[in-house]
Image (cartoon, rainbow, N blue to C red; front, side, top):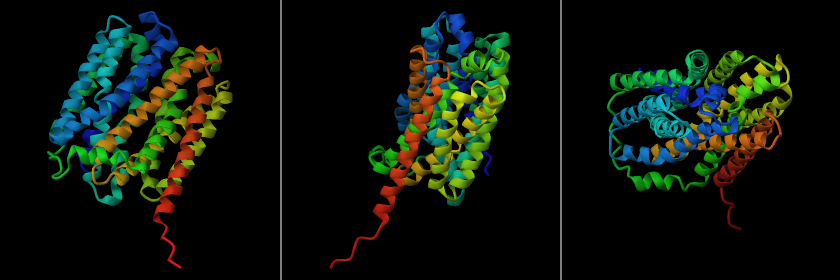
Length: 389
């Protein structure tokens, strides 16, 4: 694999850390800023919505600038947002910093996926995409747990200052390792937009919203769930997030491996199993033995869907993949925003800290329905027309 993929993985590591580290720091941020747990959960929702809103316009830059320059600009924006979060005097400014950082997210992974796919042979594209996303998953094994630990010991502001430093490292990696890749000739914005009208592209994005939303319904509130329901001490959240991250790494690599062989069957298995595991989490959350196992499985099954979903969008929008790829990253975060908001609603309604797991199970099951529908429509369109009588 080319060294440029390492640079993309470094950037993904920084972005993954800032996206997920907040889930382990919700109680500390809520206490320091004087807001409730459901309210501080809006820092997750706000980030996710920023990804959704920011992905298309930031990706449009790729039609007028080289992809390397766009990636550099995105990492600079990421650094600025995290510095603002670290210095925020109140909840409003903290939310603004999260949103600014999030504007880089969708376009970075969208353009990065296209760059990764173009750096390797066609039969290795899902694997290359998975390698880039390994930075995101490793962030959950190393960056998020360490960030959570630092936040608990030295304060959450220190965590976000360190994350800004990670962004600087990612920016340097892009400058040094990513080759100049000019925008492809003949591709115009109207071609990119036209790709988004394809029914199969829209179905794939729907699977992304619902499937990965299932993961975030549970994981957004993992800290209060594990402390107040399972009975773990607050410090245990760090190693529980390590387990989630290890599951993500394994699921991402498995998803990348099998997506190049049997993409749709991989989605059927991962989405169906994810729905079952999330439903079971409402029960296993009460067990100090079963809860960690379930957390790891949620990470593995959730991220097993990422390479196949991203590759499917790239394949379906092969003539103009950049915007479709970035919008699909936005779809992941639309699912995050939807599920974290719904999870906060069921908690605020008094249904308990395990109720978001049911929300996640229903979302994942809905994604499986869309996968079956997509495959059915694809088979019908590929079937030969009946011969005239």
